[in-house]
Image (tube, rainbow, N blue to C red; front, side, top):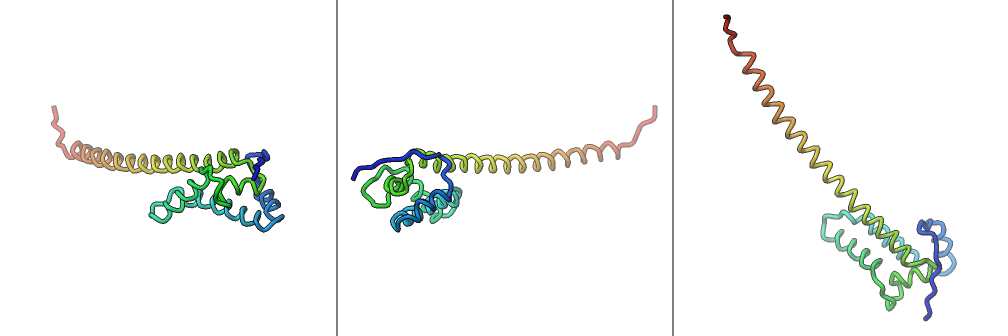
Length: 142
C-alpha cells in the first residue's frame, strides 16, 4: 500500500473535510474518527476526573502515533481524507498547547485575585485598627 500525501493549508475548514468525506463511506468514517479526536482533545484537555483524562490521553496518543497497521490510525485517516499528517498533527497539538497556556493563565489569575483579596482584608483590618487607636486617644494640651 503506497502512501501519498497531499499538502493542504493548515487551517482546513470543516466544509473541505465534509466534501472529502461525502465521496466514500470509508472516508465518512475516517472523517468521523478525526472529528471525534479533535473534539476529545478540546473538551477533555482540562478534565479532572479519571475518565475524562483517559479520553484525552487516548485522543492525544492517537494523533501523535505513527502507526500504519490499524486501518483507522491517524496516518491512514489522513491518507483517506487527502490530508498532510504533519500539518494536521501540528495544528491539533498546537491547540492543545494553547489550552495548557490558557488553563495556566486562568489558575494564575485566580491565585492573584485570592492573594489581593487576602492582602486587602489583612491590610484593611490593620488600617481600621490603627485609625481607631488614633481616634480614641486623648489629646494632651500643651
